[in-house]
Length: 436
Ligand SMILES: *Cc1c(COP(=O)(O)O)cnc(C)c1O
Image (cartoon, rainbow, N blue to C red; front, side, top):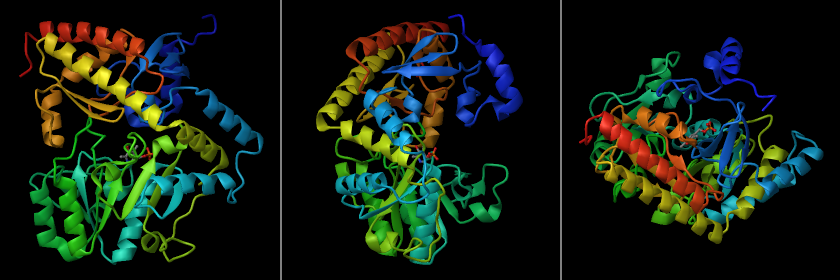
């Protein structure tokens, strides 16, 4: 390519004007090392960097690109909407349509508020829960990511019942002090927290399948316990289904397990690749929001007409047939990766929820953040570099899910599996045998 811009040159320029060369930290490849390519375009299951390298993409913009890149219908919907103006700051028909579709698919959601990001949706959900219950404390689980608002940037302390300590500089102890962090999948820890703080807890927030520490399934009974405990103590249960909401044909983990949360956070897929978030729930809780109620929340660009058009075009294509196809592609990839690992003598386990996968270097799936951290044991960067060197773009972090799109054909997936066989073999040889 004559007009190719070299990665090194762009990276140098980027680092002068963008902090760390990026606008979101994981993109900087800090945990895997190396210089990230700059992505110039995408088509179907692939993305292309400014040097012309093409990669099979398993990041999918961290989830939203379930139809693949540059989907014709989404691109057309965006162009048409933009031609009618990119923003009004007044309500447009697309907001009503998208909200109707989402409310129709989630029995727990009567009403919705759209935001510009998942972070804002979660912030709003917490504010609502605190207003509704008149309480301050919130329970979250270590390894669950709920965006970067102050109260939720809290890591697990040692022990099950530690009160939150900030793990981001700039988060005050006061902002984090009402957050209780517990180990994911520990019903006992949740029960103990309610025994101790029951009357003070406004909400429990959880990713029902944790998609931000790999992809960790809930143990049978864990989410049910949270539902029971919140109900018994007058707290709200918030499901953060920003990843999971439209990854599965049932729409949300809540509809697979028939658990009705009080509030649900959505994002990613519902915006078709444009910035979005949403919080939804029962009418008597959502009705607390301004202008209907006393809980203030707003957004200059919330419900943006171009975003709504992209989301509508995306959801329209997510038919049950599409979900079957997605499921097949993910199964093929998951089974292939597991076999490839085993053939190389590595302990590998794979979790799967719809078209999302988790890959772990352990013979059994991890239960929580602690076991995830123990399993990834330095092998992930080797996997990452081996794969990207062969044209397979996985997340530059061991703690992310793998996403396939409708454009991931058998052929594409089989190429990736063949590459994984080579990469696993070389990891196994260099590390001198099994990892467990
Ligand atoms: C991505 C994500 C968020 C944050 O969404 P942003 O749009 O990045 O602010 C929150 N919760 C979960 C589960 C997510 O995966």
